[in-house]
Length: 186
Image (cartoon, rainbow, N blue to C red; front, top):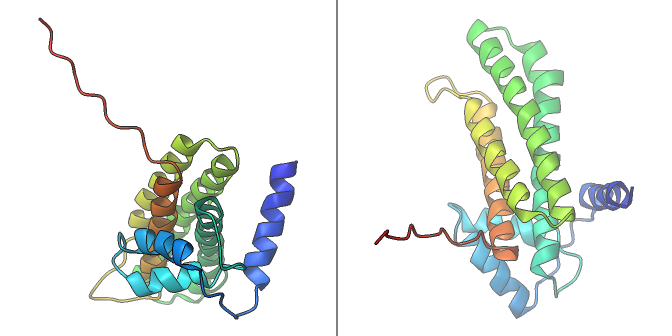
């Protein structure tokens, strides 16, 4: 029950936060830089994280929670857009087929990012990373045509970026265990 209350509070905060950004202190900005240097768009990443901050000094745990929640909220909004607007208004059968495939994919993305956020709050980072990775796989299942662009081209890029940011923050919070080397038999 405490998880649900915290999650609802976090979602309300992220959804209704004012547009005034906090300038992070140097240690916090260093954390953000470590995350964003791993992405393909440093500026987008930096703006995404700093726009969610409420204090200059922020821990990696808070950044991981904010980025995971932001990715999940974006998945919900993308799914709503597909179901409420794109799919019903699609005239071309290629668009309908694409949007239907994306609807199915984003239902899974929503579920996986919801689970990732739950495991983040439970401090089970192995499962958090696994569900985030599954979300990325499902984002790629929403195929968009380069020659026949639809709004899903940007939506997928945005979703992948937000999920990557959450993954990189999670890896700093709790690095994956090193791979064990196979021992040689005598």
